[in-house]
Image (cartoon, rainbow, N blue to C red; front, top):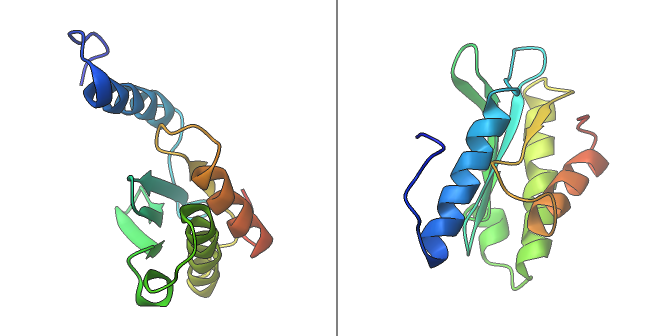
Length: 127
């Protein structure tokens, strides 16, 4: 996707802006076997976190609000993001990953994205 796009309105403009920021971020960030990439994907309802080795193209660990351990809860979205962060950190450590590169996916580092990152750090994952 090129940076120059026609003028969009509303939600289409917001999604295009997020996509542009994500392209800009991915130019500089990449995951290796020693330091895989922690990717966060956010929608209006759910949040997904994956630990990816870009050189091999493999997902080493993942967690989302669609997991059965998190899905049934009545917590708000920020609390669910904290649970996802702790769960992905636990699964990454079980896969032998200690440090990661954080990829916020073009989203602002605030709210649910920050909650997920803080919970992953508290669970022992190093950024």
